[in-house]
Length: 144
Image 1 (cartoon, rainbow, N blue to C red):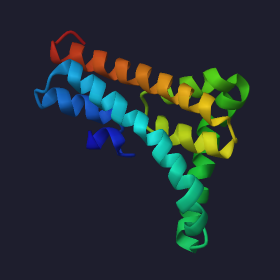
Image 2 (cartoon, rainbow, N blue to C red):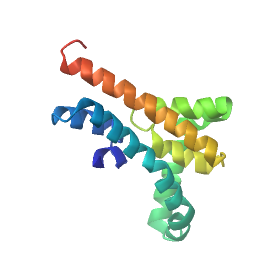
Image 3 (spheres, rainbow, N blue to C red):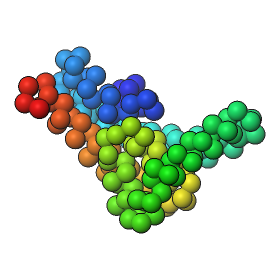
Image 4 (spheres, one colour):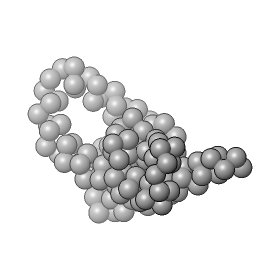
C-alpha cells in the first residue's frame, strides 16, 4: 500500500512487491489500484492549499519549477493534442515519470476540469496496474 501511494513507484512498484511477498494476487491488484487512485485527490489538496505557501520558500520554488517543467515537457504535447484520452494514455504508461503524480501535476498546470481529470487518471491507473500485474504474473510463472 505504501509503495502504491509513494511517488517513488506508485502501483508499478506496489504490485510486484505485494506479489513477491506472497500476498493474494487479486487483493494485491485491488489494494494497489485503489491506493494509487487516492493520490489524485491528495495531490490536488496539496497543490491547492500547501503549495501556495511553500512556493514562497526559494529552494521549494526552484524544485517546483523544475518538476513542473519536466511534467509539461513529458506530458504537454500528448495531453494538449488528445485531451482526455491523452491524459489516460500518459498515466497508463508504466514508465518512470508517468503516472498519477505527473497526471495530477499536468491537470493542475493545464487547468483541466477536475472531474474529467479524475476519471482519466483512474482509467489510466487501472490499465497501468493491469499491465504491471499481468506482466509480473507471467514473469513469476516463468512465461515472460
